Length: 97
Image (tube, rainbow, N blue to C red; front, side, top):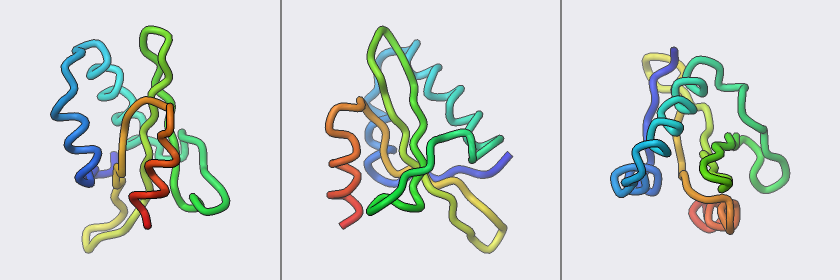
């Protein structure tokens, strides 16, 4: 299982999250990503190198955006942002710039 690191937007989102069921779904998704980083959808174009993972809860589609990086100990999963799908990828583009 790969280690995981959260960038500021993801860290803030997970700290503010109150819904316990949604939190558990995110935790399960993060475990799956750490176990098999290729389980998400690879983005193309100006988002090349970023992976997206869908989480469904109460009829709402949530996303996790992440990429793989290397540190001195090996490969690591870096979670960029998480949140509802609405305007999610536009927010990622703004954050990257």
